[in-house]
Length: 432
Image 1: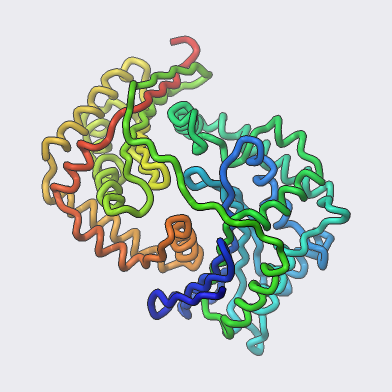
Image 2: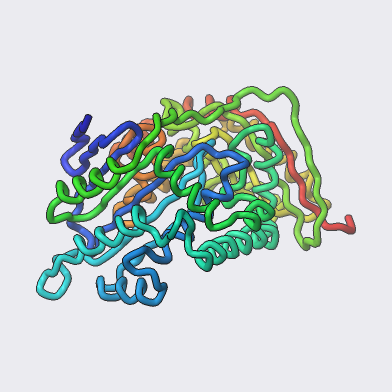
């Protein structure tokens, strides 16, 4: 049954089928429009690699334009339109996204139907990919596999990224959220063209699907009906419920040390908070984490790095999908224990309310300024709303801003008392 929900003047949500939504963010401030289709599937070790390569396969060609050169020539005819695919993850779920961006009809010569033509191509890419006898074109499968393998291998070269990933994987080793978003190299190498196509069919049948359009459509109903027509051709299965496993209690602190060829040691600490999604305490935890180590005036930056000079960098990141907080720093070997002690000292100070109103105001202003910038680009506006889909809300940056403004000292102290150390990961040189 089709359901229309009018959320505010410029946001409309249409429910097409179980687990399939169409969302239109109307805005005439941009010269381009963007269409963004996301497929949400559960993160599983045995399927993550096959799903991950789909983004790279679908963005390259379709039956109508089977040649890569012809495909890109057609994009040029659409005033330099672009189509991109990406594999990501949110909590316990993998997300395969295909997006297209093109010039708004108002800014084309003779105001031609560039939006309609781009959307037609976009639907061709998703629903009529280049495949024969349930097999994708071999060269595109191999190309996508090669890209993902190179990306996975490059993670180990960036030691800061590697340390954070290793801490998360060790901390969440018994949770789905520890599964890497790009899959596993050995599994990727084994994937055949038919395996990839089978994953594509499963994605269409079993995933939760969100189509998000941002811009100034001449006729949103036509775009909606076209999407609906394509979806209803698929024999969809009953959709799963979004539910990421959230752990708030820590039984024992885990510690892991790894040695590699590094000039600078890495210290990463993972904390459990139990605050995830868009629940009532999410904004409080976000402000707390920013004040602790998320902005240039944070406690960790000004004290651990600048004042005491114990590390080269020191920051805190909050993952709202899992409720985990990661504090990461680059340190010399002799300062690892000192930095760790001082980080806990700063958290203890916050637990005891050693926070000035000025610090809180600066942090809130910094976050609010970032919220203002979301509406400056069509890509960031689309991403803002797309990231809310798993949580069943569509909240504007302006609405979110009001929640930040209401955060006070009591809220931050409460958050400081709530975080619990779960995992300590240290990456050191081989000779220390």
